[in-house]
Image (spheres, rainbow, N blue to C red):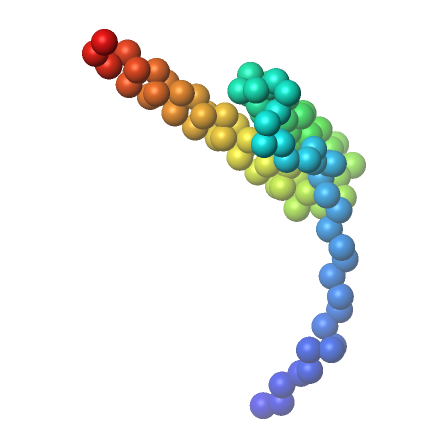
Length: 102
């Protein structure tokens, strides 16, 4: 059974980014912890808006491919899970502080 050479496969098109991602937060952000939280919530809002737009584009037929829609929804889900986990960790830390004896 002959094996076809790899060169017969077509090249894949280059994937385009969903949106321009902001640069990572600096070591000492100007807003401190509140600035980081506001940035995460802002990114989550943008990710949700992009996912909603991608889903609407899929519903009305203007979306080019399903992969872009799936990536937008997965990015919004991951952003939400990050904020949810951060909230859970903050709640646990607050409970731990309230249990401390002075």
